[in-house]
Image (tube, rainbow, N blue to C red; front, side, top):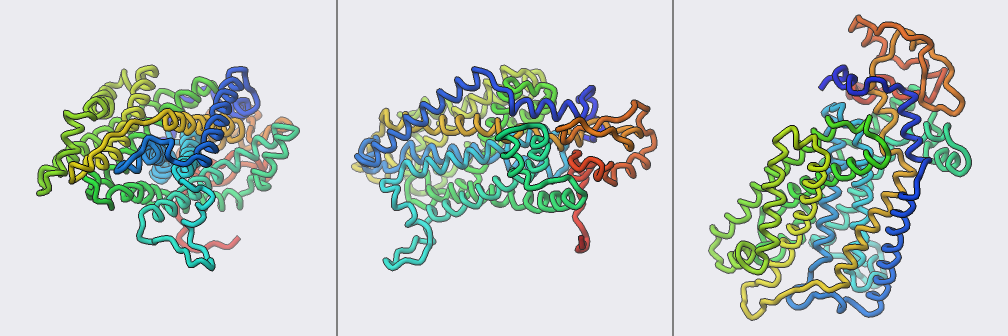
Amino acid sequence: MSSRNTNDEFEGIDYAKVTKDVIRSLTHTTWKYYLALGLSFAVVVYGAVLYYYQSVVGLGIWGTNEPIYWAMDLTGFIWWIGFSLAGTLLSAILLLTKSDWRNPVYRLAEMMTALALITANIVILTHIGRPWRMFYIFPYPNLRQLWPSFRSPLFWDVLGLVAYLTASSLFLYLGAIPDFAAVRDRVTGWRKKLYSALSLGWTGSSRQWRHLRHAYFLIAPLIIPIAVSMHSVTSWISATTLNPANHSSIYAPYFVTGALLSGSAGVIIIALILRKCLHFEEYITPRHLDNLAKLLVIASLLISYIYLIELFIPWIKTENFELMPVLAKLKGSYNPLYWSMIFLNSVVPLSLFFRKVRRNIPALLMISIGVEIAMYFERFLMVIPGQNIGPLPFTWSSYRPTWIEFSYVAWYYSVFIFLFLLFVKIVPSVSIFEVKEILRAPTRASRHLKPAPEGDGLALEPIAEVEPLRSESEDDRLYKQPLSVEADPLMSSPKGYLSGYRWPRRKRRD
């Protein structure tokens, strides 16, 4: 959609209002925020005490047994890795495709990715029997001649997770530097010191904008293969085993598609919550929710196709024991979980084909929550049936999670919620400078700008209201050069600095 069409939905919003509204979300808090922060922190402390108890007693407090060695731990890890996919990946894809509707929602999606990956690292710690020896998995010179197995998918998973977390955090931080500078000139006290350090001396010069856009568009293409490879490597943890229903080549696209569905639903849930709690209704509009819902229904159709393939593969194999886990899902002990997963992932999202449902906020929220619940069922069914229903009947076993494992699940969610509540008060949830890029074009009077109010970093006010430029060519020429950058070094990026980026054909010298 062209930027001129997107400008209409932001009618009445100027640069000063965007800066004011976003900074207000960082500095103004209510008792409800502190209540949510306190409750989540209490569960975090409870989980830390529980983890200490497990470190002393051992993993015997879990409900795992022979031959079920992986249970809620690996289930939770796969779920959090999948939950993290859509944030940074969709942001990078939409940036490269120059989709303007990305601008108000991409920041919260990138925050979701970074925090979900941090939570996934905590999940890894909880199912390590001796966490103080975790450094053994890293290749480092030592006198004991201990080296990790480079052929192990567990080692690949660690490297992929570190690479994905590093790239996602860097992508998030680069895009937030101009916003940190805007907040720096509006706040006082400890906040001013914090944002002065985070902004890295940003002044908004043409040189800085040029380097920012080059770095931004260099990292974006790298995010896509890193994200896909991360989820493919996670699938190989199960696919490289000989467990029935796990030893399959379909697992890599299975994991990536499921992660896309889970991540899309996660972005919708967080966008709806922040839209309501931080009063961003003017920026996260029904059009943005409608586009996110379209991504959700596309991912639902893809995962439904994978479900059919998953049922078809055992029928063409010669080993009969491959059918046993499938039958256990269809009409055995895992029947309730399997059909609930099919209903919530494949049937309910079909209602999003109707525009009224896509723009119905309560319905969209309930569908997205249902998808997340179903995805947890899916991850559970990926891990457990292939272990307790093996090729030899005398190895068959049953598994029931204990209260310890359910407590750990609550701990994982509380860690994510606690970190997210802290981040929304530090990192602007809506990008200030990229939202300004899609506002209505400045007029001729904006060539002569009044000095911004003291402490107003990005807000520029025209001296007088005049008719917009009618000449398309003149309008384009106006935005090809920065508008009074030297007069106000913290103004938002000139129109097209990111959305109209073109790769340089030759090396430039500053």
